[in-house]
Image 1 (tube, rainbow, N blue to C red):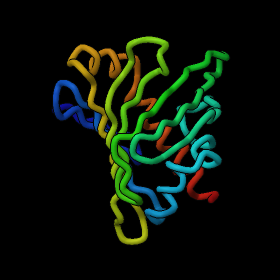
Image 2 (tube, rainbow, N blue to C red):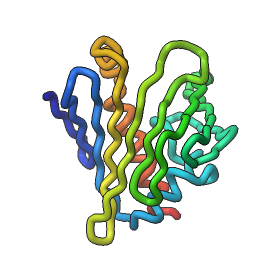
Image 3 (tube, one colour):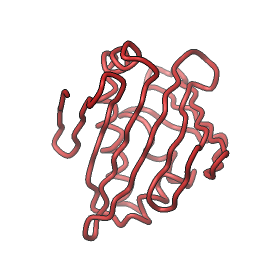
Length: 160
């Protein structure tokens, strides 16, 4: 298992197909849940530094679909589609994530929100289809980009 950490977040690679990011937030679990599931909040933090997110559709329920586009600082659009497998308010989201048909970048994500005193610990577990897909994802910087995204979430939560 490989482990890395930033100032506030930690990442592990517990198997050859997984990436796990964790971070504690100084916000109650219900507030963190709203940031993950309400489009007006989600759009304000999702994506790494310099990215802007536009939510096109958000139907957070088992069997529901969300679609959003992240625009990079260079103007490149990155379409995203989420298909929810499990929604347990305010504890867990399990979904299939892909690039909305633009390629072969599909993986499963489990997001857990655990109350810790007055705060919340978020764990994002990404399960990729193969070891090679996980290695490519890590190789293009997914861990650092994940840290940046969670830092943006922390900033948004402090303003909610």
